[in-house]
Image (cartoon, rainbow, N blue to C red; front, side, top):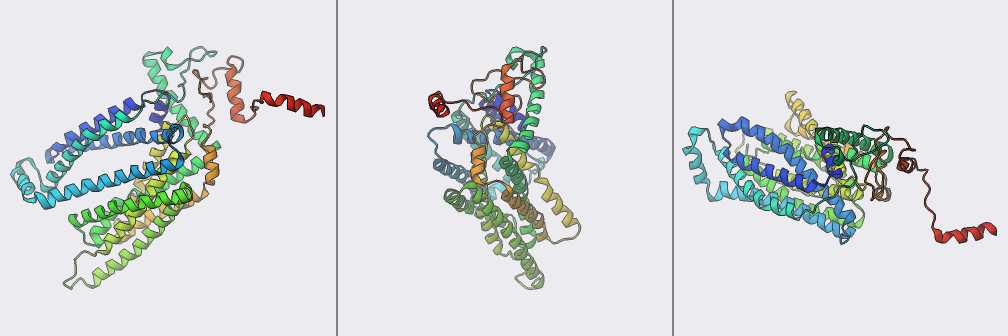
Length: 474
């Protein structure tokens, strides 16, 4: 992800690549309508490819948000709060609408028709769940065919934020990629992309503590919050005896409760700042998930004590309350985290830093599920699957508290990262490769090093020269 972001920051192809990725995603979703037992392996491979393409699509679309905050003259800070709220309200509302449509089609309107379709197609290995999946893929394909072209039509072209360095055979000169051409230039771009990621990561660690702690918080919080869905399905099925219908109802409640959570997170962000809102929701998620462990433990004991009664095996509706709580807090969490990121990204590397952000959202998500699998193998109760999530949520809260205050975050977001080979000027067209050009060969190299070390003097205002001379004479 960071590598693709580095390439997009140095080339004008962000919108074109987004269009290609969106087209490939739609094609895979359309092909997966033909899923059955005979094509499971091929569809599983396509699903893995679609997962990667989805992360690329998320990276390319999210990278526009810092541009909106920084460069769009009609967007004030308060206006972006409303934009971010609408963005996530549409996202969660769209998921809730899709779930409601699927439930209505498969459970209310045409249940007998779908069952008949499954029975009549038994020779091809089609079951009721596979037929339902086909219908879902068809609705997804039609939706993407409408919204993807509209979205990428309105996304603007993105010019390069800075030139991309390509080494020359002559150490005293620097050249851009367009002057070399051919396969050599492509390999050079790949190498320089990874090299830029290295220098960016090094600059974040040394010079940008707010961004360093924020990305750490994102990695920990996403591990504790994004994996709630598979863990909650397991616990609700085993403890609350939810079947597919009850799980669908619980997720619909969660998606709808995310809407007031989005509004609440926006209000707290406006009243204080996104950093405080982010810390508060991380603390609430930690306490809420830990409380859910005790509630589920009590429910499991009730199930064991009343196993012989007529009420045994019936679902416990307190699970819906837990779904409402998690939905509200997750709506708050995702809204404030996105707002925090959009406002704190340094200029000129929005897409690359968006790549770091997307990478941090997925890098640790496999750990809680693996820990939960070990707990189940050792005979632990189903509610104990939530304990790894609580641990990551608590660590993310501690990491968020270690971040500098919001004033320092905003001050750091005004200046680009001090990369050693990129001239921090808007009109720069050539870049010096590290170690290839001396300060005598290129006068800009000395200027760049002075900017990095902090020894570069601020230019004096000519209007103050006479005043300074008078003061010296006095």
